[in-house]
Each structure stands twice: as C-alpha cells, then as structure tokens.
Length: 326
Image 1 (cartoon, rainbow, N blue to C red):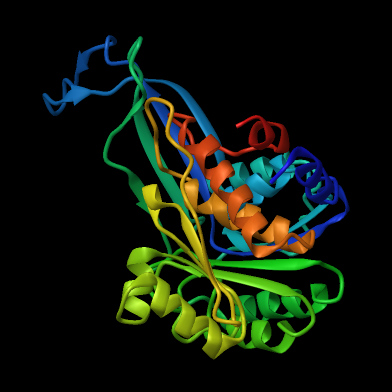
Image 2: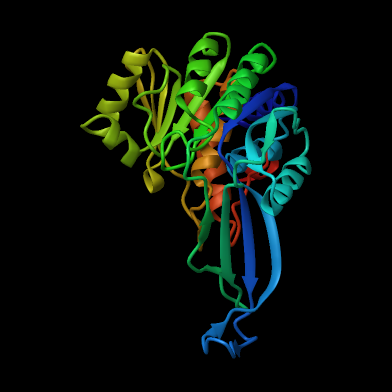
C-alpha cells in the first residue's frame, strides 16, 4: 500500500461511527517494586509492595481503545459493569477515551465488573514481568432484563453506525454480554451494516457475519488446514473470514474463493503479544468500514499488531501515525 492510499483510507476514520459489543473488563495493573522487601508478621510470607496502580479498559475495551487511537469519530460501547469500585474505574477509563458515547453501557447491581488484576514486577532495565493474574467474573447467567437492554441497544444503533464489532470474552456460556438473545438481535441487523464477530469459545452458533478468529479457534471450528477451512466457511456464510496466525501473519478468505495472505511484520526486539488480536480486530473493522479492499485491511491490521506487541507492560494501542511510520 502506498502512502497516498494509506492516507485516503485513514482520512475517513474521523467520519466513522462504530459500536463495540461485548465483555468489557477493567484491567488493573499493580506495579510491584521487588526492592521494597517485607515479610508479613501474621503469615510469615513475603509481601509484594505495590507502588503504583493504573486501570484501563480491557477485553472489548481494548478494541474500543484501539478504535479511539485510530481517531474514529464516534464510538459506542455496548456492555455492562457492576456497581462496584472496578466498575467505577472502568466507566471512568472509558469516558476518558475520545469520541466515546456511554448511553448503551449499563451498570447492574446484580453483576460484578469483569476484572483482570495484573501484578507486574518492575525492575530497572528489565521488561515488566507479569505474575499470576487475579480475575473477577460472573459465574451465573446474565439477568434477562439486562440481556434485553443489550439486545435493544443493538437494534437501536443499527441505523446509526457504520459497523459493529461483537466480542465474546467469557468462558461460561450465557454469563457475559454475548448471549443467545443478543446473537438473535445481531442476526436481525446484520443486513443493515457491517458486523465483525470474535469469540474465544468459537463462532459455531453465530449468525453469518464477518468472522475473525485465530488458527487454534479455526481448527476447533472446522477440521483441516486454515486456508481450506477458511475458504469453505466463507463460501458457507457469504462473508469474509479472517484468521490471525501469530508470527505467520493473517489470512483472509473471500466468498469468491480467493484466499489472501498477509505476512507478519518482522519484530524489532522484545515483544509482548497481549492485545495484538484486539488491535487486528479494531483495524480490520475501521478499514472495511472505510471501504478498504480486503488485502488493504489485512496490511493495516498486521502493521497495527506489530506496533502493539512492541509496547511492554501494558495492553497497547496503535495510532494512525504509528501505523504509518511502522
């Protein structure tokens, strides 16, 4: 892609309106100074002294943050948090992102805020090292009234946005945002606007939308090599299928049968792969909503992922300027 075409595509981003539907987490980073050593008098165990705490949107929030970094003009998170401290931090972090509209992000007294608590050892001259994560999730079905609110939000925004991204992050079915009732709403509106779906539990029972998955998820979906499986799936759904393959790049199968492969950008030193897949999802959606060709969307997504994996100790984002310079 030449500089002129890059500018032509990305210049449309400020005019785009994109909704991100899914499981928003509060990513709480606890920065630990290992030089500040203590032992608990009560337990006799070593104490980790936290010297800094920061919170940022994670999971679906990482996708939203990437879209914000791209300068997308209007962003709609569709999800929920609990009426707890982590929910307060998550809402504040979302509200601080440019262009975010919070009308369809709901607070629920019956739910906990999905939280990834990430202790980080911070040592001079070393990349941050993450210790065992502490997760908070909901292990019961999402209440019916909240499911209805979320599904109705999709229906209400269908004529107002250029694209939806639907991200399922939870392991237990029906305990997060993406329930069967929400997928029914997605099925209703998918002919009106671009919809891209991504799920760690697989997309087998999802409507025929644009699918984005990694190679492991593809192998679970359909037996066979990624290229043939993606091609068969795209012909079946009538929509493009994107498969991210880590250091091997990304491939895209089109309903026409054409399969395009975009190799990964070479790494430049130490990397941290956290957030790469979310950067890919965000950049595919923005590029396709800006009428990029499939091969152009692949290139932009690969560049963005490369920018993100070189940001250590955080779930990073990639701006248009960073992608253009990479």
